Image (cartoon, rainbow, N blue to C red; front, side):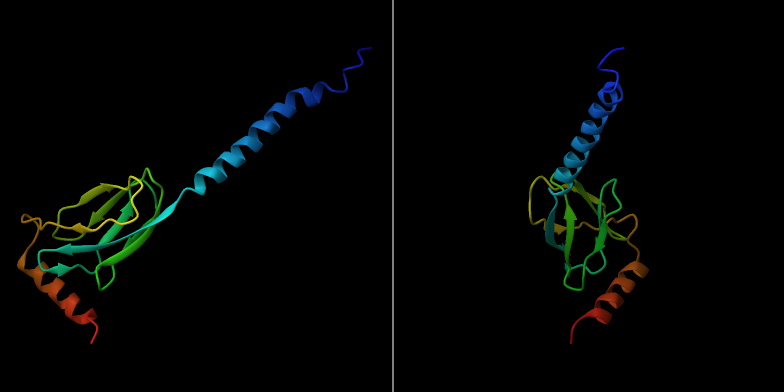
Length: 129
């Protein structure tokens, strides 16, 4: 009988255990590389309330507040997608920045008088007195 027959099961499972432990530590290291991006969203008339800021291809998203400011957790390789009704959607790579300020451009094909009225209503409703 071979003296090493007791170690044969360990010889096949030990490398796979090592592999999973390595993946666990790699996953923790990747997760730890996130940072917070802050900024202000404006247009030709001032700050914009309610702009959607989404991390492309991820479920992370936020909205700009009444001052047009936002904050969102991202990784350095992410791309932020800024969208608002009546404005052109903008995609901006994070690229190790901590602040991204953006001036959105009106989309003349979608921006109707009704949308302008609604926007003015929202801004007047949520302005600080």
